Image (cartoon, rainbow over the protein chains, first blue to last red):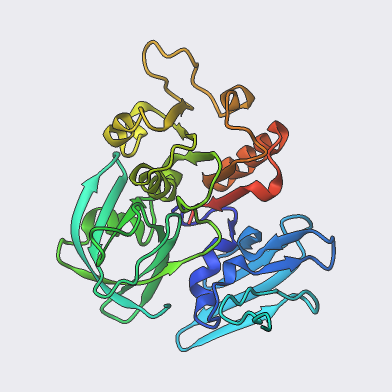
Length: 98
Length: 235
């Protein structure tokens, strides 16, 4: 609610990234390839100002992703070459046979 | 889930000098969980759009097509002062949500609950308090609520009335009420005494970034495992 804070966190990315992900992105889990700190997307530190948001590892500040929202377009860059999010897919579980 | 819906302002309640709760009718609202937020989009006559996030202050329930938001007017802000005081009753904005599945608590979760709010960070935690009060749960629930002065307390009467079911501890940072045993000051280690056992509980912290960082460190020092702490910085 402070419109220009030092940084926010990944909770604030739920809306922008929700435009391109069908699963809630804030619970996606990530292991930082630089410092090995695990974090959900919600726990990343997010720097503005909008419309460009940069999400960084809360441990070492390595860039996890950048998202820029424009009228008609959303740009998403994952990492600076490494680091992948693991999404839970609750409707796609493998059933036990029998 | 993430399309924009029309939302009509139906009620505005003054909480503090600059804090308001807004009730909006949102047709076909799908419901939400305590702790979630919405994005609100305003469109100017010339097409310029601004989007801001606001926390949902009440659990989904009786008023299924209606949501309650907390808005703290920020001095010089582009959106929040307008929503807080100028958007007329009956006017429409656009809302997208519910958003966020991580900073969420529901009464189905077992174990003690610790909530730590800084200023208007109370808003999403109030949705959790209300859900807790509406449930049959008798697990311990503690709210530590940091405010500058007694006049800055949101939901003051409701929290007073809830004092027999949850423990509410107000922590005044600038001006303490007359006769207060605790001098005004920032939340510190002594304020975390007598808390629910850290090994079993869940803890939710919401407030300005500096407050959340400070409280997070205090909780880790107190023995809370990082995996039991969920945080949301102002948004």
